[in-house]
Length: 132
Image (cartoon, rainbow, N blue to C red; front, side, top):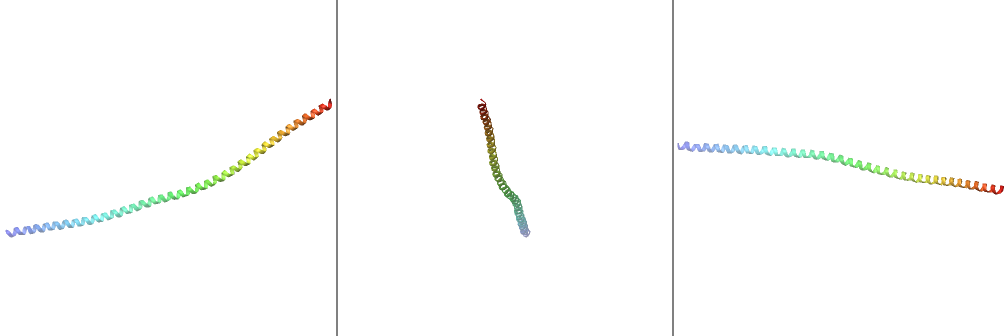
């Protein structure tokens, strides 16, 4: 009996050692799987991050190109406005000159009518004097 009692602890010890080995093996497998999953998650996160950055950069690049186009259009419109402003100023100067000329013609015509009336008046006065 002493022997069987001593064999049992050896069997129990072997079982415990086996359980510890199985646990260590399972823990190692779990660690490997966890590490593998962690690496895959990091790679996936990096890929998603790169895709998001590329998508955002594409949008930013498009906005930048559109901004440059708008700035060029603004410069073109500003140049056209300046050209139209100069042309409008020229037209205003020309129309002012025409208005001045028309006023002068009207003044001259009015002067001519006054002169005509005065000449008729003088002529009538001379005729009256001569007839008397």
